[in-house]
Structures are given as C-alpha cells and as structure tokens.
Length: 339
Image 1 (cartoon, rainbow, N blue to C red):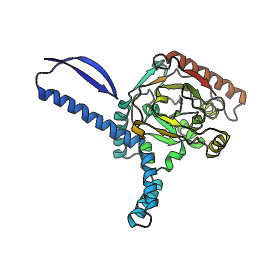
Image 2 (cartoon, one colour):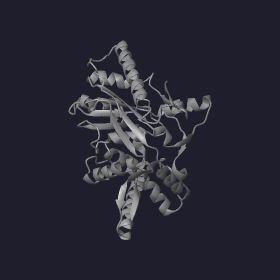
Image 3 (cartoon, rainbow, N blue to C red):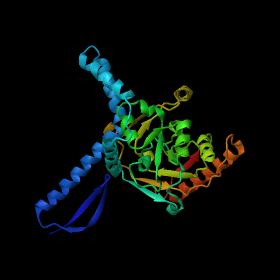
Image 4 (spheres, one colour):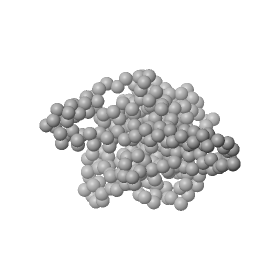
C-alpha cells in the first residue's frame, strides 16, 4: 500500500513525498525515530530555557526546608554553582551546547534569511544588533558560537549580566558562546576581531511590548553605535519575526510599575508557554539578517552628531528590513513602532 508520511519538524507538520511502506515494522521504526527526535527537542529546550524556573523552584523548596539537612545542602549547592568559575573551553560543555543548539531550534522551527550574505567578510568584526527583545530573545540562538549558520569567523552574544548570577544557566549560556554585556567586555571583544551580537533594546523593551504591534526601543540606544564607530565595525540590523508569539505574558500597568522597572533596570513580567510551563510555544521564526552598514572609525570622544547620524541610518535600515520580510515572516498586518 502507499502511505503519505508526515514529517514533523519543530512542531510543524508538513506533507512529505509519498513513501512506499512495505512492512509494518518499517513504519513503526520511522515513527519511533520521530518520537526520539521529539524527546531530544524537549530535553534541549528544558536545558536551555528551564533553568530560570527550575532555580526559582529549587530556591523556594530549599528555603521551606532549611531546618532539614538536605534543604540546607540544596541551598549551598545553588550558591556554589552561582560563583563556581566557568571553564568556557570545556570540551564536554561545548558538546552539550552544540547539542542544545542543534535540537532546540527545531521546536519552532527557526529559519535564517540574508539580505546579502556575500557582503560579509568572515575575518572581520561586526556589531550585530538584533530586534525585538520580546519576552525572551529566543531567535538569538542562531548566533551561538557553536553553530556555523552565520558568516562570522568568531562571534559572541552579549547577554544581560543578571544571567550570570543564575546557577547552571550561567554555565550553559557561556558554553553556547555568550558573554555578559558591558562596555569593557564589548570593547575587548571588538578589539580582538570578534563579532558582537546584542539586543540594543534590552530587557527594558519589555516595558513597551504590545500584543498587536512590534515595538522596539531604539531612539535612546546609542551606546552600541558609539562602540561600533570606535572600533570601525560595521553595523548589522537583524529582525526576528514570530518571536513575539512564543510566550503568553502579563504585565502590570501604572506609573509605579514604570518606576520599579527603571529602578531594577528591567521590566518584571509574568510569562508562560506550553501548558503554563517555561517551554516556549512552537511558533515558526524567521531570522532576517540585513546588509552590513559601513562605519568609519573615529577615535573617542566621538561627536554626538556623528553618533546620532549613524543611529538614524541604522533605524532606517531596520525599518526597511522589517518592511521587506514582514510578509514572509507572517507580520504583514503588524505595525512596526520605534520608541
């Protein structure tokens, strides 16, 4: 008999070509292999994104059981992991990170398009600015140093320094090629020829999120522009379509919340994915990589008008990138707003 086999990739079902199935055993083996892949995807997602919620749960359990020996040991283990030095060159760690980066994106799935891939020179450094932040910038995984998707010889993703205070998470994210964002580290990486990837809107962008619009917080973000000019590193706009749909979220309203967010330097929100868990929803994502924007190197102090002019050029390029790929990315009827 002839059977149409459905190939499942990242939670999306697509009809593949007709396949002749001659034996029931062969059919079962095919579906068993598919089930095994799904299990790998689940484990990869849990290792990548489950660390924050797991740490919160472990802390609550430990605090409620401090009178017992095991509760105290659990809390001490957490504290130790929060300060334990990270061996970023660990072969085991890099293999784990590559395994996570191989299977986790299949959940959505993620797809990358380049406006002009030939415009990149692999051996030079770039400042890659990714938007939006959304609840979590999941699409930035495509820039992990353990993957060869992007045309950069050496790259690091700059993440919030708060991540590096979270036990276990700090190890996995470091093995994936991420580094704490900071002016000194940013400069050091660019000076050694490493491409730096960041989300300029940052966690503050969560304060402006809207469900029916793509809102990016760029008008007051000039630090990354200044760093690019100082290093003479071209700017690369990147927009991730579909990312805003990977989590449900709730955010308080009112001036008190805005003041709290400014004090904390991030916007605390409640978010959830599949069945109320930290696992994101399987929504397809399109990572659109724009053409590099030439930057003329200038010694500091860099005049403000030079920074503002380059910032305006970058924002215009980001708007053009969104307009060019919004239909392909499923955002054809979604407004793009720059705050």
